[in-house]
Image (cartoon, rainbow, N blue to C red; front, top):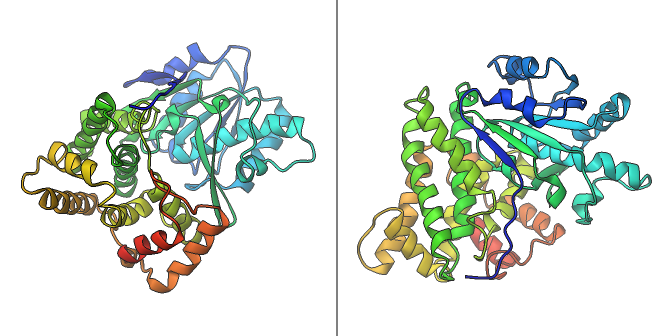
Length: 386
């Protein structure tokens, strides 16, 4: 196991009825900006619960955050913050709303300190964030783990980029599985796949004798397989929803990734598919990840065997286990009703060059746990994904 430092300051309130805990988290004299997306929280009862909890606060709202949050939209929130002297943010929604809130929290203080700088520089130049407005979250779509980590992904034009800072952890997050009951099949499936691929990006690399991290990761994967296979046919089951919600949080709160090599090539390639073609983030992962397993099976051999044996309970020769593990993964993705090839989303060989050009532009030329996925290998992965 590699050396590591683990830090996660986010306080989690998990379970039905926990939205009322907002009152114990946000200072009574805070001026709060509630940030949300397209307005589904007004039809599923979450907005009403949040409004009731904030009744004694001075609070305002900002809506319209997109599924892949846009820089231009997030920047409009800065005017609201300045006009109303906002000093606390509350994200109510899924990972996109939370990601946008992290950027808004950082950009608000960045603009104060750097009047002549574009906050987009935070992402393009990976500038160090010195401070951010405090914020909490009410999660309504379990998927990205953004409710319990410091990372954020934002889009501007056809560029989808990542940033993170010790200052952009949520101070608290409310995880009430009841808030997920109104999600569509597509949103449910996307959430399960997103959490699954987050987990394997940290697990399916090469062994470093990190037994605890491996067992945690395998438990998350098995839970997602079991509950994901049931949730679309039993949508009102709160126990299933609770297990999926907690799995998605644990998949990317930092715990399973400490002391182990990590991949993330699937995500980096997937970001370009979203930026160029508007494909849901999780669906880019379900398209790219099987191809990564196939192209990098030699480098991932030991962990692929372990994955097949422990997660899928497979037997046979090593090569048989690897082949079956890849097939089982694709079958699971298909069960979750997501695409598993570029052709499934009407893309073909003629689209690959543009994807590679964006990878080159964003310096994504040494990906994977061995940093050996250059543009040539990325082309092989995309061709395998056809």
